[in-house]
Length: 494
Image 1 (cartoon, rainbow, N blue to C red):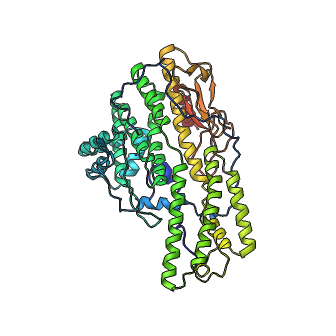
Image 2: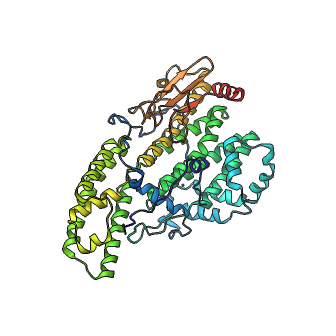
Image 3: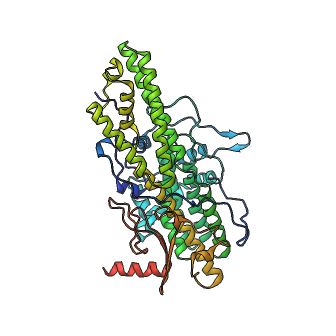
């Protein structure tokens, strides 16, 4: 029997679009006065000088794409949670127990809540949604607890503890995400009622919750995945709010500074993949030791040699992986892993590691180590691509907000995005899908569009929108209101 290093599952495109997996958190800017527009720009991390990316090559069959990304996503369905600490440091409150309390206050959610909530968040309130207003009233305590938690700087759902592997239960964020959806529904209702201060407060609160999720120091990859899900929920109504110019100069300034702060504080994927490596190593060692105890045939020399070989290979391939993640270009990593796969198949005749190999030592430890690496090292193209998509989606909304504020204060649109620097932006954000060049800007008679090339790395001039689909074609865009209205009319006519 092959060693089950990873369990497999699948995350459908529709699940990502709906905002939650099928089976079922930022340093807050609140209360901190924002510097006036025109003051020295805040620090930033928009990347520059990265190597030219190339579209990742697909060097693996589906059979061997046992990614850590997919395996850890199973934990979203878990009902167990880690112990939570009320304080992380003396005098510094942890937002996580408050989020948990908000989730425990949920009341009377209908069976179709997720579907109807997503529709309201995406499209706004309709006449047929009037009955759900009572749901907001019933869950007002949960929403208020949630809003309070988003204003705290520290949030850690998991207390660091003993050594962990893939059998260790992970946090379940289902209830907290449901409260976030209620807050977004309330924000949409406030927008309909033209209470734009409250609208903006709700949208920024959910963005801070997403940032909290992405800042976890344990179960890091799961936290990053949930950050992507929650952020994509809020960016659609936020983009529409900005497109419609729902703010005056003061409110727009606060929104822009908040978004820039959140972008600056984002953490990358490197920590997540380092944690994945630790989990993978601990899982393998636990399985080896358990089997040795069962059979009574523990060969200390064999296992010591195997561990040394595994550590060396892990170090080598983790270096390729992390370099590819930083550059949004996994081609070298995938090619290197493909070469190892072909080498193993040539030497062993199979890519599967049998338990008897680890007990009898029939295969050399260096070969077994290579087989384990091939079976367990994740290609990770999908999680890296999604990570850069969600970063870029925030970038275009930031530039769109800066554009709207520029128009409000200058009575015209800028001719080039560089006009926004440094008064509105520290610099023009760079496009991870276009060799880290600045985002593109196209200005026409009826409006303008800011866009990224998107995962297909093709310039569609902002005319074809990126869709989370198998083809993954189109640009990641922010369009001005007039263009939005024209496109809507054209879609209706079609």
